[in-house]
Structures are given as structure tokens and as C-alpha cells.
Image (tube, helix red, strand yellow):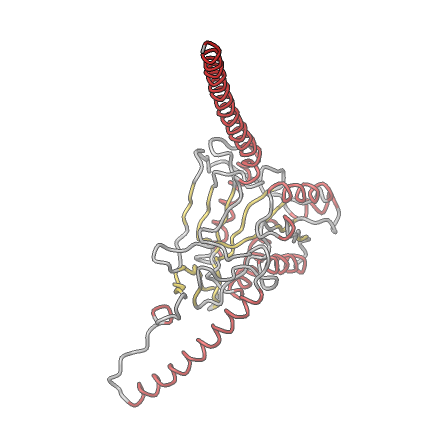
Length: 368
């Protein structure tokens, strides 16, 4: 009987020890899980700190991208184009019928404007407008626009470096940005193309500068292995390499186009007339360090302010806005550097080309 009691006591002791050991094991396991979670959070925080400086200056469109935007959806574009063609032919047929009815019936209502007509499902209107120039300061800096700034003149540069030296460098953050057909757009439409894009506009600008005796070169690279938007590091590395190779460069013009959708899902096309020719209005943008500006950034701001005044004096409505950004925009460099947005996606490629020719002609008068 006594031996049975001893055995039972031993079993109870073993069970008690086992329970204690299990509790310790669970406690240690819980602590380990918490430590792992903490290490993951710390890792994500460190990665975020390292990545943030590279992406903070990238300007993203305010609308959603199509799926697989890094690869051009040629098949989708063809289908969209075919759909647009079918819709156009259908609309043309309806217009013919409406015109016949109007001619036969004098009391028939007038035809609607294109931007007010019913669009195919999924398509939204592009509205025409002309904006009055405004200065937009998105930084926390106070700018003294009364300061004088003298831009470098072409002949002075040629005297130092020779008549074959490049004076202007044309660059792009996203050279595959393109323009619409000027009629309508779709929120998931194709906003990028391998031809008739911003890179083509940059090439036209470069060729036009060279044709009038102002040497220009075009940095038309596609960064990040073909991605839509370039990485800041890749762009700046390419820019610095080019400026080192050509110390004569006095002006860096980063050419792009805007893309903004209104609250009512329309898209505004800002344009102006020059000698009865439809042109896209432009936006000039310069960078800062938000709460302070360097001497180089101040030089850019003063130059662009004068440039906007000169352009609008030669062609009324040329410059839609001059914007002082809160971001640096890779512009804290020795040559005069600014972003030139030629219209938006809502404009047509032809309007952008017309604006480019006007800009080159006016810019020449400023730096000669």
C-alpha cells in the first residue's frame, strides 16, 4: 500500500514538472515570436529610410496605371484603337443622319459640341480651356524676385569652348509618356508609347535648336530596365556623367507632360492660339529643399521667372503656370536647370510639336 502511494506521489511530481516545463517552453516560444516580429519591423523601418530619398522626388500621375504598365500593352492598345475607330465610324454615321435631319427640318435642335456629346462606355470627355498664368509656390521659401540674374549667352560659351560645343541638354524622367487623340480618354487607357512620345518631342527640340545654330544634345534614356518612371539615382548618374563630358552645357531642360484628372472625371486640355495655330500651354517647374534654397536653386527660379514673362510677352497664354516645387527635382546643379511640361495627356502630339517650335524660337532670343 505504501509503495502504491509512493508511486502515485512520483507520478504527481513528474506531471507537475512536466506542466512547469511546458509552461516555460510556451513562454520562451512567445518571447521568440515577439523578438522575430520586432526584428522584422526594425528591418522594414531601415529599408524605408534607405529607399525614401530615392523615391521622394518622383512625380506620379494622379490616376491609376494600366496593368503591366512596365511593358507596353500593344495588343490592348490595338484593341482600344480598333474600338475607337469603330466608335468614330458609328458616330460619323449618326452625324450624317443628324445632318440630313437638320437640313430637312429647320426646327431640329443644333448639334452638340464634341465635349458635350455622349461618349462610349468607359470614355470620359476632354474639355478645352486656356489658363491665365499664375505663380505657384509649393515650398516654404520666400523668394526675392527683385534680384538680378544674367543668363549665359551662347556667343560667350562658344568663345570659351568653341563653336561646336553643346549649350543645351534635353533630358526626360519618363521619355515614353505620350498624348491622347484629343477626343476622349479612358482611366485605364494607354498613356505610354514607343513612338510620338515625350522622347520624340525632345528629339524635335534638339534638332530644332541645332538647325538655328544653338548646339543641343538629347539624353533620351529609358531608366530602370524599361520602367515607366526613371529611378532618381540612374537619372542623376546619367546627368552628372553627361555634364562632366560636356562642361560647356549651360542649360538643362527636363521635358515632360502633365496628366491630371478633374473631380468630375473629365480631363482638361490647356491650349492657346498662336497665329491661328493650336498649341499646348506649358508649365515651368523649379526645385527647392522645401524650407530653404541654395544659390543654384535661386538662380534657376530667377531665370524661369524671367523666361515665363518673356514667353508670355511674345505669345499670350504660352505659360500656364510657374511652379516652385517643395522637392529638389535633381536640379541642384551648376547649369540652369528646370522642368518643362508641354501640355498634358489631354493635348495632342501635334499641339505639343507646335509648342516645341515656338519655345525654341523664343528661348533663342533670350540666350543670344
